[in-house]
Image 1 (tube, rainbow over the protein chains, first blue to last red):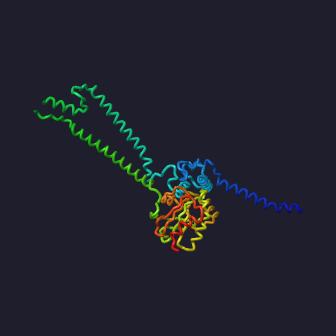
Image 2 (spheres, chains in turn red, blue; image 1 turned 90 degrees about the vertical axis):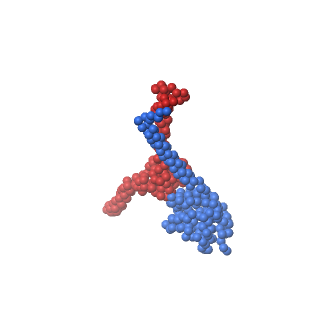
Image 3 (cartoon, rainbow over the protein chains, first blue to last red; image 1 turned 135 degrees about the vertical axis):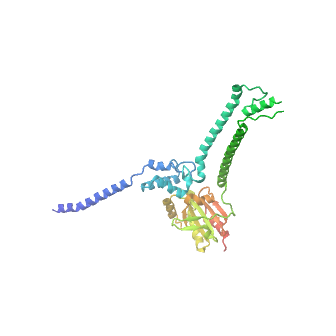
Length: 167
Length: 193
């Protein structure tokens, strides 16, 4: 009988333990373990100002380790990638971002290379056309009747013909 | 001599138009390139400006401390200000931390000296642990957006700047202070006995 009473007192204890374990499990579900890949996904888009030109995901300094720990902590709290990046920008400035934000003078980074490329193509095409025209006119028209360079332009050619005729 | 007969196909006009269009096109390209070069120059000029020199007026800034208090430099005109840049990950900073705190406790009762700590590129939990470890009591705060360190164009941490009562930079220390006397030697000449 005494054994039965002892067992009776154990029941609430067992219930409490089960509740506690299930509570912990639920908490872990809501706050899943953050992997190194998760941290590095964000870290590779950030640069610590202390270690110039080394992305945060591969930088070995203590400052960068602390930053990665901070990313892990924020991810654990359920922050999104964008929220974390915004937090870092607010704390340390735009220069921590691998890609400069699209505003102000930063637009040059995005606009100048394609514009320079297009300009280069334009100049190349123009140059090729003029070379082609320069080498093609005498053969096609056979107008090497004047000394020196044959006139490439139709108008000049006709003007010269008129002048010759009127001499 | 007969007059030269001009062809009726408006060739001169067409040619003139072509030349004009070309000139305008090249003019636009030229202006764009000049504009781009000016923008790049202005940006580089900003970067190339060296740190604040001795005798220069220190630009105003506001430091938000870890206790969420605002400390504005201009509001402390009339005081000697010691501005120390540090970080929790910076080992040399630890060498001077205790001496700085001792100096602060020495000068604080006078009321005409202010110590400010600017935490450079750091994470808050580690920064707070650092302040607790060295029992630092003078105002300290993060360098939000690295704005203050960029104003001073610091090259690393620790760096310390001494600002006189008129808001001019009178001295600086690159690297850690090695003793309390070294700190006092920079502040005492600025104080009236």
